[in-house]
Image 1 (cartoon, one colour):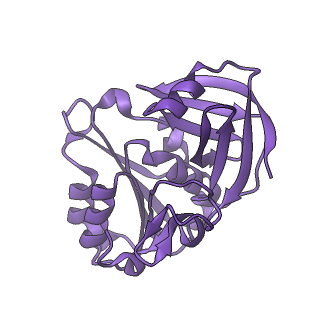
Image 2 (cartoon, helix red, strand yellow):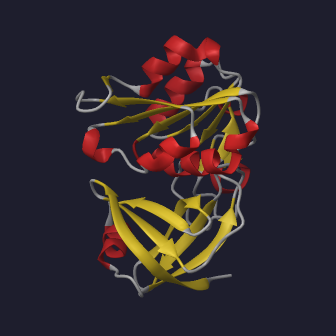
Length: 233
């Protein structure tokens, strides 16, 4: 069921990335998503970064129209939907790439007291594409990588994970599909949960547009245990 939500606050968080605070608050598990609809534009899924917060990168017609909205304007929301992350282990790593940070940010905020140590390994193309850096308030260690070396170390977050994988009881990842595949291989598909992305239309497992092998990402995911995705990513 669609609910009208008012945009209470809008602010820039990185290059071509904005945060939108809604006047609605959702009870959710980190990793779940909502569907946002704009009249005469369409509907798109977004991971919740917090109970009333989505963080959006401008990549196409829908997000470009969303970026034109101002505080006080409206969007229509349904959800939350999908399967979220499950807290496991004591010493964990969050591995994020680009705009994959929102569900990891939410996970750290929701669960920071459940773990002995949380390491965030976060990669982007360059310094100006790093978003939600107040995540530092909810983790114990932050390792930044950038493709161009403008922040942190030059390289990819998966390289850091591969070198330190023995330190972590559980790994949580969200980001571009090639990165997720590298995370799964680095962990040999064990002790890892990843949030997968696919094109979604319905968000509730009816239309089949988000199929990933035998799974529907909106219904069976978007969070999957690593072994479920062996041979798929």
